[in-house]
Image 1 (cartoon, rainbow over the protein chains, first blue to last red):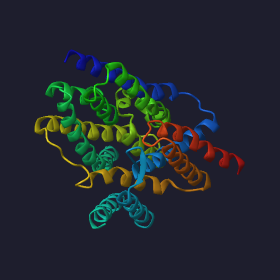
Image 2 (tube, one colour):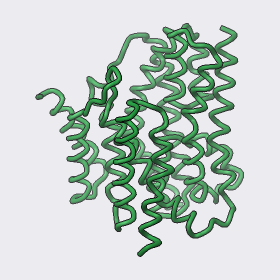
Image 3 (cartoon, each protein chain N blue to C red):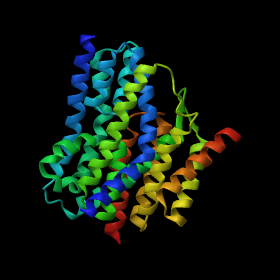
Length: 104
Length: 226
């Protein structure tokens, strides 16, 4: 039980350190235009990677394409493109994804 | 004042779908921590102090499988590497918060990063928005961990479609920012790199950080060439 508390303390410190380093090190610095441009593109890269990781699910060492998530994402993307309404687009994607899961 | 109110309202509304999904995973974490022989107090304390779904889930799952404290710690450092990139990318948007950055940095992780970076791109630096989003997720994660540890039986996020909320929300935030060739090329490069890395090593922890470092180089190259 004592071990659990040590682990919690160590995880809390190590996680917080990784969170604060980037924020403190980069803020207040004059970024070169190239670096600023680079960090401008980082979110798009990361968000795309997060989406890929949720559409392709590892099952026993093999990658499996999740159709409910893929189709849900497609409908949200289309809804977002044409309606530009955040919450309705998200709700639509979840409903379509659920329907795909239960009807397929 | 109205601006602040509107920022708080927007932050809350935009974080709500993810907060519900996070709460569902919080329930699962509470249940899992219970199985790893964590007390109710230590289960909730971990959520309050660490506040990281991936680190906590992996830690308790590894402990159940008999892993040592050292191996759990090393794994968590690897999982946390991407926070360095998130923090660096969010730094400018959080800069006006000055010393409050030390508190706001607690929210540097996947979901607040996705919401925060989209907001900063559209409206410029906005620490208040990031704070509201982080607080909403913190509340959802901590409370659901507590409830999960008490009820002790599985809530299946898949059954309720809550696993869909993460990717679908990310897509909804990504689409409006896809403007101009460099950005679209970055997204396409990220998809290719991430699929390649996952194909090479399914479910590995480095896909996000490697993609996050490499894909923007494609956008940068195209922009500079134009």
